[in-house]
Length: 337
Figure (spheres, one colour):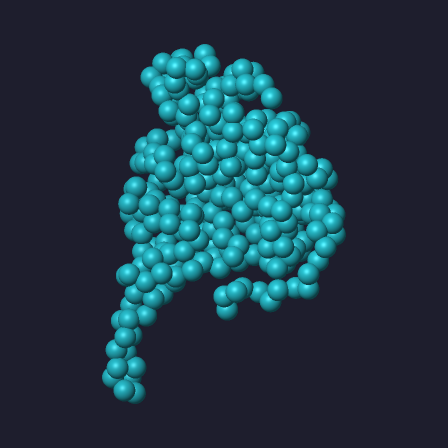
């Protein structure tokens, strides 16, 4: 255990932790709901990624409270929160940190000292992540996969938990850079954030134009969150669900035996990490709903968020304006448990 990790609490029975996890889902939904109107599916997917220790990409037009959602979640969990506004002139050192030369005035001794960047936090919001060049985007890759940062030849471990929740505007292309496939693959989920309903939008206006402020009390502390994150990886799953998750990911790959939607619209499918996240996401979704073992519906529920951003569409799909979500829906029809 590193010096940065919290003291380990007394061992808690997994049954007690499981009951706590189920209760925490409702508590977090209620806490986040004091600021976020609607978006229940988005919040549930955020919580699945959170307890699965997976990074999450939120895609939606400006003004849909994506930033507020992430900030509110950090407050509800009592986590350190960092935000980086990605811009075309952002440099890797602006994220990871940099070394500076410091001098001891009493002795005249000089030494290099590493000044940590905003990535050294528990929950990092990468706002408008596609607005920065690939070189700067690449600064996140090691941190997202290995939970560490290498700067000036030295490795610095990131404190657990470490999660990247990023936002992306899907409609504005001026001054943006497509995310590399390797970086997209490191996001467990890509979540589409849509417009609120008319009733929800009325409530948003009423809440935000009256000067009323809402405070968020932490539902969990960091040590408890780490316990629950550990629990979900110890929960059982069925061989049938695991096989279904693998078959679904493999079916997205073009080849001689590919199903019609894949052959028609895709030139590249999801890799093995998709199989892992389909299985893990299904397990966490089931646990949050009070079910000890996931079923096929849990796999299908997380499939759009896991598979959509991992599939590379071909020219025909782009010409026909076929969205990844439509391809996943067709894939689910063809691949049965």
